[in-house]
View 1 (tube, rainbow, N blue to C red):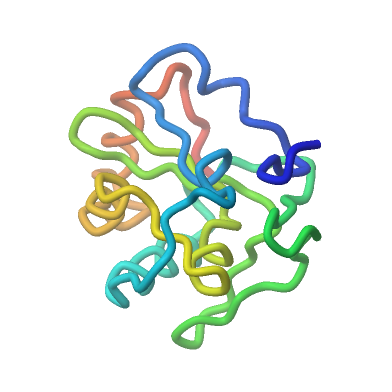
View 2: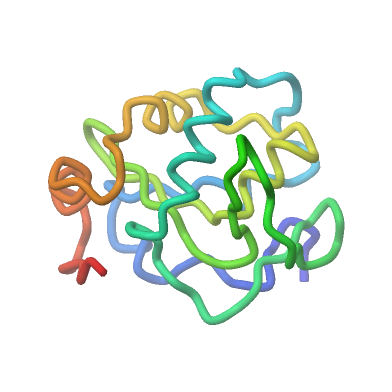
Length: 149
């Protein structure tokens, strides 16, 4: 297994087009951009991750390539408990959706990973999850119907 590969593989539903872009898998390796990141972005990402709707559940545990171990404990940010070991967050943008593992928050907060700017902008403009606006934004680009819970 390569050092940047998670215990979960890249999701198969994202291979069918350019409207769904993966962030936080192969781009979080040793060559990834590192450095300071806007605290407002971290706050917004944590808020999105703290809501379970819009998560794509997975039957595995993500592995942190830098720690070389699964991260089973949640992250606490702004008094919110954020489980990061499983799940995928869908972030809609104007012309696509981004899909990222919840583990991205660990990569950012612990290892200084800086996601691509266009993903950061999408997170900052993402409608609140559990809203009709969020659902409609995601559904525009998603290749199959989503059964919201």
